[in-house]
Length: 238
Image 1 (tube, rainbow, N blue to C red):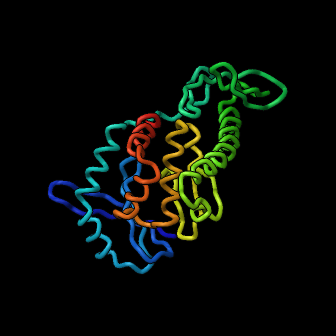
Image 2: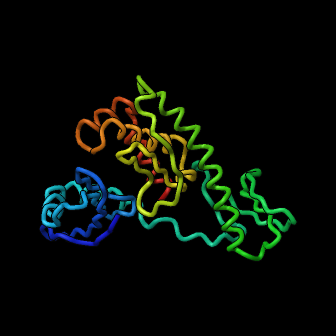
Image 3: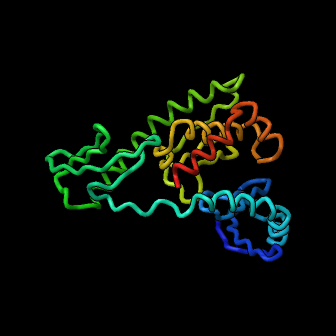
């Protein structure tokens, strides 16, 4: 997969976009939470055709960018020091670093408690917290996947082939043409109803791979309040 940066002019607006070339038959444009524009395109799609598609969707792109920009600036980079606040399932927890021979992380009365033999090392604290988040993400996402499959009249028809949790720089999730569900581990910071929105959105892509009217009709039937959930996701994770 290759990535290239390009831009078009639309009236007084310049729209920058990244082209990701993949083994796929169709072209898809998405606006990510940081307001960047990503185009997933077939390997041999001509750049002129891609730019023309971006130009045709320019009004929609600008609306989406305005929507996301209202939530910027995003949360500043965490320093992993005692007293700092961190999100877990939509709630704020204060970081507490405790000297201990054991290394582990736990939730305790409004705190994310980090026990470590090296409390003066933020890099060690970060490693422990990240590992804890990933472990919780795998467990919670598997649970929510099963719950959200039940929203569909024939759940097994929408079951992904597998689920992968990892760091994603630009998006919350994706569903591959082979029905592989990829979830951003940072979603574990979001409220459960927002996690459910993301998972249900991606499950709809098992049946409808694009973002056309058919997709949104399915999403509307399956999760009627998806717009409110999406808003809460972006608001909470800003």
